[in-house]
Image 1 (cartoon, rainbow, N blue to C red):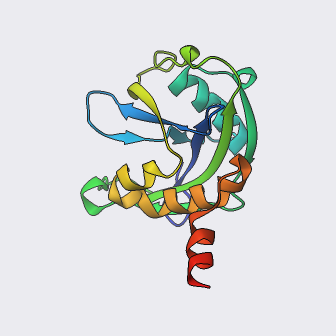
Image 2 (cartoon, helix red, strand yellow; image 1 turned 120 degrees about the horizontal axis):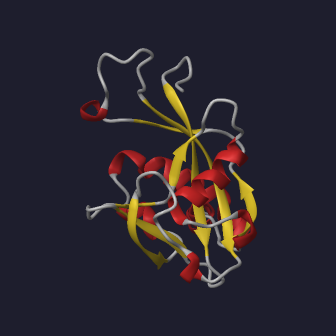
Amino acid sequence: MVDVEGFRPNVGIILANADGRVLWAKRVGQDAWQFPQGGINPGETPEQALYRELHEELGLESRHVECLGATRDWLRYRLPRRYLRRGRVPQCIGQKQRWFVLRLTAADALVRFDCGERPEFDGFRWVSYWQPIRQVVAFKRAVYRQALNELAPLLGVVPRDAVRDFAQA
């Protein structure tokens, strides 16, 4: 499903543990790390997609997490030209995402990667809240920065934009 502007609707998941560290997932067979994310199916709300993706990608159910909030608006990124699939109508030029921040309320031993048709991840680690901005693939960096800044207060983290504004005052 692609919207009239060429963006595929998607959800992004920031899962925090009790220590405020976030789950950073390793893509299958690669040295590439990202937050879990996935497409919204036709007729599905972003919230429904969130819990479906949470189960498919991480093996977790809604009872294992507390949803703390979501971004107010869609955040968009464009795909680099080399990732565009030519000949598809409509052509997908990027993703528009609603980001959710969740707190894990169960044991992290419940995280597993074999609940979807094809696993997307084969490992994870808990990292500091801001580390993903430095490590995610470059074309997703601005969206990660926006999502992390907007959702930071929900985990008691000071947004980096606020830190920068305070330092300049």
